Length: 273
Length: 82
Ligand SMILES: [Zn+2]
Image (cartoon, rainbow over all chains, first blue to last red; front, side, top):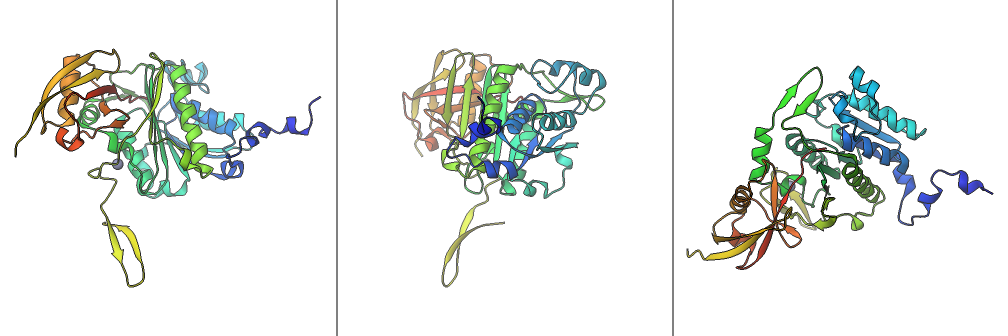
């Protein structure tokens, strides 16, 4: 016979000793990007107990999204629904306590101090310039940033913990700059396509999103000691998954040189502005 | 400044193939990545080079990274989509 504990949606989560569900319920999460990763991340956030989620995306749903996006329907594709709106409503549909806010617009148009209002940022983006933008704004706001990326059966998750950890840009090199320069978008009515179209499917989307939200659970539970150090690589074709370190690059623009500020009685560290 | 020439192997993470390269200590990681990607006719895309469990910085010279002769580095694609 089912008892009271079987009526609690989070009973099984409460059995995870380190998980701080109180913090999960009240954490303010910013999700940038509401495409394939955004759908799956939204699902995992809602079922994990996150209740205060903001979703940002400028795009509209099209038919080719439907092989990997839980919340999008053919009707959304026909109507050209705003992705951020559909994902926000999807989160609320899975979690009655959730209040998901949709922001339909470009990352670049968000107010300067927008990121400071969040406890964690989840990057569900599909291009390098947007990733660099979100990474740097989160880092400068001092907010942990968890970035997901995928192509075909390859996936990657990076955890950035300011003020001392490496960031996504630390792991970029000249090939990233070339790709960022060469990719261009065909912009239709609120729909952006990146050229060339990249391979994408649901199973890798699910793996990457699940790892992102699991790292998010660690961050908001105050267990960054268990967080990825700092990148997870996944190759679903070869069945390889491993943790790799991207060291902090002192030449990365997100890490200004730190100096010691010496006063009479104490020594503290600070940044050169 | 005397720059040593040495050989190292770069492994293609996607196929397991390896290529041996003769390099100087002042060659950069960026140059190794681009040479290897060109050699294997890789698609236009982002790649990183790693040694063991660490990703090497693109702008660093091989001398700076502490790479040694006969080391095996691995070229891995860096996915971009979402
Ligand atoms: Zn950095």
